[in-house]
Length: 463
Ligand code: UDX
Ligand code: ADP
Image (tube, rainbow, N blue to C red):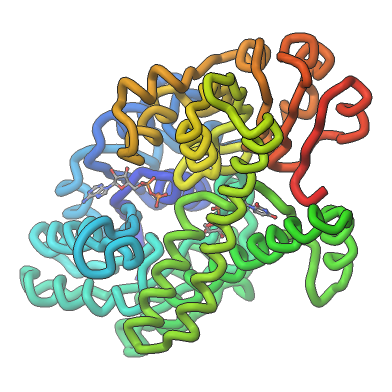
């Protein structure tokens, strides 16, 4: 089966970059990315390709190459579903905020809406690909909806989780460690898997394309994220011990990372992990384990989240205690708001929770982030629902210039590891802040000795 027409539902951080790369590598396949969010689609279609809604190094160029040729962005979901032979579901699956599984289970309402819409529109057989991270056995639910509400057409469900990390999405998509495709082991299932293998095989070596059953594929995605997050929480736990004992966590990371069994990646101590996946996926895993009565398994993974919350809280506490136990009415400059560098995504960013803890202590915060808009920062604070929108705008200012952010600040805090922070004129910052000049480096990206020589009271993580 040769696929000529693909539709992707959801033009977000996963759907947008993934489809852009697939379109670039498969010029003979027409790809339409659809979304209910008109503003987002308009931004993807903006004549100035620098205005696409997602910041990822290298992405705008790839969009420019394919857009209008074989890559289209549209709000006409029905038409795209109708025409496609293969439909990727790439909508968001946030943690449930209500009912059973509240705060833990994945909210599948957007997925279900997609399934019902596909069932309603489809008049020819289709392959439906789960791209969003889903809890184990969602494919079964998808299939039940499609088979029981459809127009008698046949659906094959594949699980094809995306492993791209934000900030390196293009690179991760162009040379993935592996592509995972889970499907039914029936004749039709195997044929559907092959159709998707063929799409990826136009640029991914075959030995990197793994075929599994659907449940293994779904569970592998949750497990990969849980393992990665666990490494960050593990090194963050050691960072606290380093601070108490005089060891340096970066030295410990380097030493253990050179053990080839451990490896060097994901051992950077930080203010805490964020992003749309780690916390959500672990909570999901915990919920699934509990559902099966596996309480020790659930507790084991939950500890990764507990440690992460502790790390974010500890950073805020350190700022308060260092500033003589009060930040009330003091200006704290935040450098960075995104959950990591090279992305404008702020979901679950540690900055949000550190800001909240400091606002609770009546601090005033001024934020500078190279890629995050003021609108997004206020939306993140408003979403916490702990203060009125007016209070958030009164006590948190957002500026476009890092030196302005730091001007007359009682402390400067680095929340995201943007490269540009390393090249600032730190003497100029020093001259502009209130003395003693406290600097809290939540990512340990600056040179402590150089900053101390300038006069800063420098605090890193795990030092
Ligand atoms: C993650 C997975 O890496 C990716 O495979 C999956 O598809 C989605 O979830 P992402 O959340 O985009 O990707 O970014 P990632 O690079 O994994 O970082 C997650 C968080 O961990 C960030 O806040 C980052 O700053 C933090 N982190 C990462 C550390 O604090 N220390 C590290 O050593 C690595
Ligand atoms: P991710 O990081 O998983 O890509 P995002 O939140 O960035 O998540 O993107 C998901 C996108 O899916 C959003 O732009 C949202 O508007 C879109 N979406 C959700 N439900 C539907 C639906 N039923 N039809 C079309 N688009 C949808």
